[in-house]
Length: 85
Image 1 (cartoon, rainbow, N blue to C red):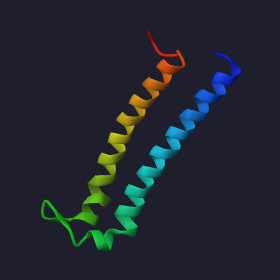
Image 2 (cartoon, rainbow, N blue to C red; image 1 turned 90 degrees about the vertical axis):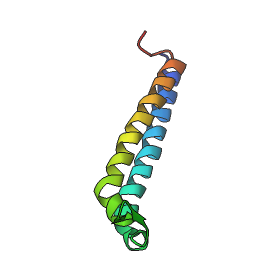
Image 3 (cartoon, rainbow, N blue to C red; image 1 turned 90 degrees about the horizontal axis):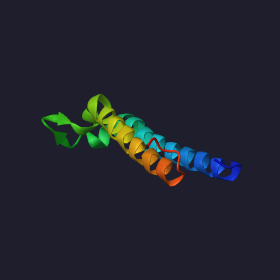
């Protein structure tokens, strides 16, 4: 891979990581701690939504973000022709 393509590849990879980690931070810290009191007015399965996000929601979101990252990286690898054949 040429140096210019390598830099573009890593720049896009870091962009994906930054976006996905920001989403995870907002969900885990924001919904689980900062907005917990306002979210607790909503019930999900009999439990307050703020409690649910703090205990389970952020974990579910993190696992979903892992699958999204894998898909994005597979597409990026194919685009730059560095995928496993």
